[in-house]
Image (cartoon, rainbow, N blue to C red; front, top):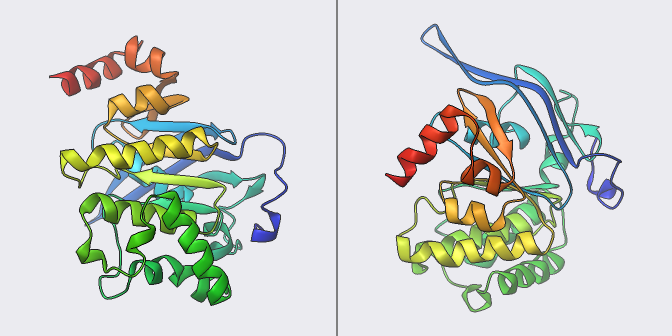
Length: 259
């Protein structure tokens, strides 16, 4: 099982590996298969961008990696240890994975720094002084040290999203998952968030990013995966997938985006 004490020693092979991952949801007797036998390896320091239409399984894939959803079949390993084992300590796994959603999910009645230190103090039992010092480092990292004592409602959408990213970074995760983090932002606020993600990529953070921002994907991704019907339909470098896609479904998706 994975604990924070394991963070310094990476096992050989990919940092993250999915093999035969399947996930379905049943509503009113109808079963919808969202992920179909997903195989994916992500190396340490790699930035993988997921693209595809709504409903293609991108968000569900991220939620399965972070154990917010239980897979129906298949195995996920992180740093060489299986995290889909039902005996795994979920909080210890999540301490190694930062996840940021399109909704900022900040507590409006708490200050920015209290939002960032809540999980380290209450869940991971970090000393308050240590947690606050680390939180201030992360606020410096995202360019918001002067907002430590502000309330989320006093911030712009872009600032709130950067606080959410700081909160995800505070535990020094081995892996960051980002799910459409710019889709709820006004267009003029998107650039600051994408610039921050670009900095994280260049600094060597391992990331899986679900996005419709093709310019970001071209500039930052090491690999682009196009999901369709719950499967990875095509993957490769940004130049290959976005510039010269081989699969008809990929071509149709990119044509719709251009239109």
